[in-house]
Image (cartoon, rainbow, N blue to C red; front, side, top):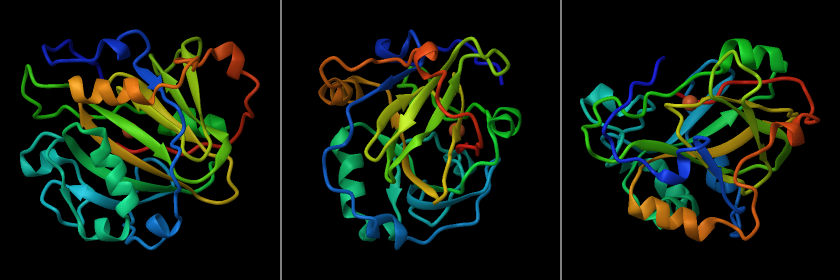
Length: 240
Ligand SMILES: [Fe+2]
């Protein structure tokens, strides 16, 4: 998909690389909040299931908001939300308008080549998003501790020279313009990886939260040279 320049409001902090890594979430994450949810058989290029915390109408519906004629904002909590109070609090603590909120359950990847070949993709967060409202981006909170796994981010699908890798330990938080960057998670396993993925509208509230969550001295962008030694292997798709 070619990204066409728009007049949406975008964050300057994402302009250079299309993503920002933040400090790790410091609160307690209780597996009951994601393991007890209702998961749907929703495949998005890999062996994935999704639990929906917020949808367009509050139904247990994993589809894009555009299916309801809506941009990816104004999400309504689903019945899963009452089982995941900490995760819902995390979403609302950002303070920005949120849309789809889901938990991804990702089975271990097959190999990195499969991830690159089949699963790298761009999202379509801004379908029906009117200009000049805020550009919708995605924020991740990694729930399980998967330090050997990482999110692959590429500016161009077939150009490995501009590739960033975001490690996925428990509590990892990062913001990605997923309509700009090609992305897919490579997950070592052996257990499934769980992560919260939420759509947020770009604007002062999101930027303020990002500023608050940026740890002193953190490297905002991964250097491909630094991460080149990351284990090469299996991969599975992230979500559209
Ligand atoms: Fe995606």
